[in-house]
Amino acid sequence: MFIVVALSLFAVGPAAAQTNAVCSADNLPGMIEGFFQLTTALGIVGLAVVWQADSLIEMFTITPEQKKGLKRHKRSAMKSAVVLVALGPLYTVAGSMMNLPLAQCVDLAPW
Image (cartoon, rainbow, N blue to C red; front, side, top):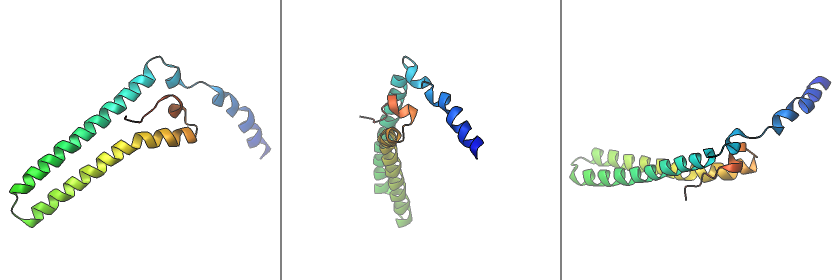
């Protein structure tokens, strides 16, 4: 037991003192933020395209089963877009509360 406590005090100290490689890079935090903003924007545009296409197809469907399937597809697309939009700010807030190294220098809020 004493060995575990001693090792955790002395061996973990230098590892915790290291600087974050992502934060110390020149352009990397900005590139990560830009990539996340781009993928979020593409996800929202994809949602709009899928929603409009499903609505258009729904006008020309005949059977109620097809209409139910299209409505399920629209709900699934909406859930995916909500997760995509909420994931960045959630990581930013939760990561800063848990002292995650990437959350200290990268803001993943898409706006």
